[in-house]
Image (tube, rainbow, N blue to C red):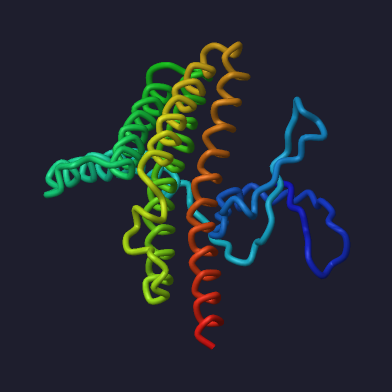
Length: 243
């Protein structure tokens, strides 16, 4: 393992850790994107750089085997249960956030199917890569996008409703049309990335679509922030006028 030590110990540097054979089951409990880096100084042999080893644990070989055998099934049950509950929702009018959730759950099922196929039937690198794309871009990013489209407009509405600035509902914070356009772009990027798993010539177009989708998401979120800042400015002007 390669660890980058940062903080009070001086300039960032890398330390190579070689745990003994009986400690290969080390488990890091704080593995979020902010603690993961990739050293690309050797593009053909990229190195994994980990930060923050404050919460460590271990898994025995038996535990590892149990999780590996049952985790895909648990994910599949979660996806099917979520889709079933959404099908029973009382509000029949679909919206962007529902579309994102369904895309996420279908992608999760696809990731499980691709991983199981690559694991037990076909050791295809492209299939294993597709499983990763479906899980990260199709499942995780779709669900996070849905949460952002729900939470951010709600927070803006919540914190501006007492300012009397005209923000009376969440649709005024972020309209359906820009969210829908970004969601369709995200779906197109996911399709292109899956295509690139088998046809590398599609990688450049897939990357451009993915960058466009992420940029569009950022622009939509900025629109919501702009509404909030405008409401604060209008409220301040109103108070100054009354004084």
